Amino acid sequence: MRSFLFVPGIRPERFAKALACGADAVIVDLEDAVGAADKGPARQHVADAAAAFAASTTRVLLRINGFGTPWFEGDLSLLALGGIDGVVLPKAESATVLEALARVTTKPILPIVESALGVWQVLEVAKGPGVERLIFGSVDFELDLDCSGTWEALLYARSQIVLASRVAGLLAPVDGVTVALDDAAQLATDASRGRSLGFGGKLCIHPKQVAQVNAAFSPSEEELAKAREVIEAFERAGGGAVSVDGRMVDLPILLKARRQLAVVGCESSGEEGRVVTGSDCADEPRIS
Image (cartoon, rainbow, N blue to C red; front, top):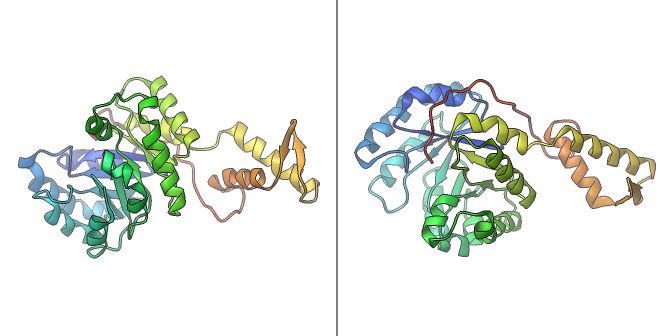
């Protein structure tokens, strides 16, 4: 699960296009993308689309409104719908809300860590009941700290989220959005940096970002070739350490090579994955 595409809950005409864009998951947004007056209608749009969501091969997640807002309780009623595969919880800062949410649904929970307190208590959030993986809400975190949105300014927060995810035994977290919709170079840089830090995917706010994100978080042909070379050399050495292209290869490097091949179904290592290249997508912007 590499690409997570937002689609506003108030724009049902975009649901089908979002599902067809090759994203690994579509996040139907009831929070930031929906004004106060439209919360009720957006909720109804989601209910009306439940059958279509259930029929899709794309995973559908629902970003509900935050705990303590007037809409939180009403949003929870949608989690029973068959077409909703998981819930995205904004402003996650402690296990308390996760415990309340887990009493309502058994579906996977993806908390968004997007505040100073959330990062400070990120391990508590990561260990909360029902949590599948964490999401970094980079834009809201930038707002909360009144800091810049540069990679350097947000590096500590990103590192904490990645480390907490690993300690809690979660899937690799999902990195925040790239707000520059027409800057493919910036998206490539952001995705590459996120992957190198340990993120397993990235939020998308426009369908045209999906294919690039999918590619960035999938092993390249060069990486796959090197992984095969490592495995073959290790096997020839009878399980002992061996040198490949002047680099020592021991068990941790072998396991990493197997993991890379497992992502595309080329090797059995207990992990599964798939490659989605994306397809023709609509040009409508998405709101995160």
